[in-house]
Each structure stands twice: as C-alpha cells, then as structure tokens.
Length: 139
Image (cartoon, rainbow, N blue to C red; front, side, top):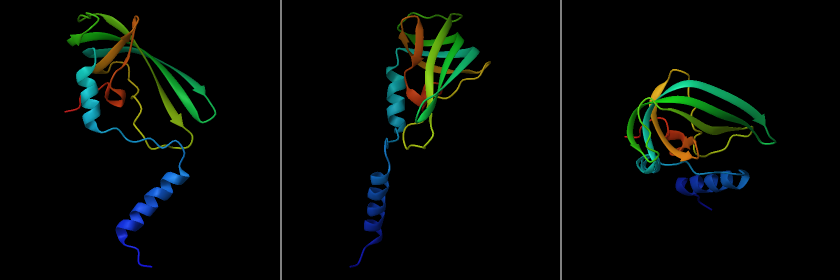
C-alpha cells in the first residue's frame, strides 16, 4: 500500500488527538479582536498592586489574581468609570501539569504596568472580557 505525505500527516494528527485528553483549539486573533470590540469596559489602566494566591489541584495549579488598578483613560464604560477611579480586577490562570493545546491564559499583570484593559463588570469587581488578550490590543 502506498501512503502519500498528506495522508501520513492526517494519520499523525488523528493519532495525536486519540492519545491526548482535553485537547482544546487555539483561539484565532480575529476572535480576540471581536471580544475586545464587544467588551463593556475599554480602558487604559495603571496597576497599583497585584496579589496572587496559589491552589494546587489534581491536574493543575491555579493562580488567583486580585489586581487593584487606577483608570488612566476611558474609551467606553458601561459602568460609567472615569479617569482616576480605582478598580479591582479578579482572574485566574491554570497551569496544567500535563500541557494542553488551547487558548493562552490571561497574563499576569505587574505593579506599575500601564496597559489597555478590556473588562466586564461583576458587581463591584471586574474580570477580563477578551481572554488572553484582555490587557493588550489586537490590531
């Protein structure tokens, strides 16, 4: 039997899928851009403080972040934020012990960092609205 290079690649891909558990698809930049455009809050923030808490679970280590930031600029705000307001942002990262294919985690912000922020409000706190690209702008 003669197997072409294309067929070999497809067979290898199927084999990788078969032996992988929890395979997730990567997210295209166009999806991140759309999420940024639809985010209720589009701001520029300056990070004042970052608190991290680590929790180890069976298949991953979770890092919970609490970020206090000052609003520097407002592009749009469903919650009527204004420059100078202080906000709290909560989000988590999961670091799997067995690496997975899939979307990137929301990056860890650093104290003093100034960056765009695409957020949604949850009560008096905010959370990333554009996944891994919530703190930079997709062009």
